[in-house]
Image (cartoon, each protein chain N blue to C red):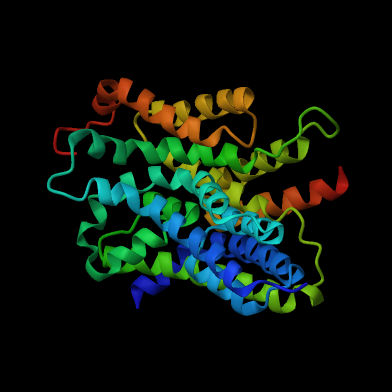
Length: 232
Length: 108
């Protein structure tokens, strides 16, 4: 099956990241007294890396539900901006649509916006399998951490850089494919600036929100440079 | 440590529900009829901006104020770029950068 091969190939870089972060989460759950069943259900239904790690602290602290919900919202608010790229594209997804929306993590998002699907693939099926494969890696990582975290020879510190490395590669490839470099430059300037102003833990949402405004200001220039017509 | 089953269930359910909401909201808001023109425009260009922001987000823990002044992160990023220029292969680039980073954090 071509689509499955495509999905497995595209998601290899994510395998490292998800296994590593998943294992970290599983170990934290284990140490907080939760069995693998809890890790399994969190990985399956929450499916959000940084939130799940924070969630363990919330559980340990006995935080009230409103605090948990608000924390979850602020950590994941960046996802509000992801769906915009797929509103049109997911229209043909049919029964897969709810799952595609649910499973739109940073990593799946970046594969779907950057991968070249080619002509001979069923695009919808391939995209679905990319999302599903990432999800399975994540669940496996969380389970390994829960079940075997204690016996792993654990000095993998630094492997989390694989996420940054993956995003850098995506940026390089998008940079080369784009006629207009303005969108990438906006991202760099805005995020560095807001990181200085708001600090590393609070710059993400202001950066994403102001990027949209700045992209709208540059709309005519970017559109003409990219050769966009009113049809796209 | 004893865990409170009902409480834990509600916390995890709340996290799952809110996460799904953040992912689904754009689809709910723009579900009806023809997609507005500015959303079509943003769907084409916003990912290019977001990917750069995500790189900075991943590297947000970098410490520049004390030794080794972010050298590990900077050199590993350059390694990814160099590996990708040479290999044009995503796996090679990701692995080279990550191995480089893991070595540097131990050596520096």
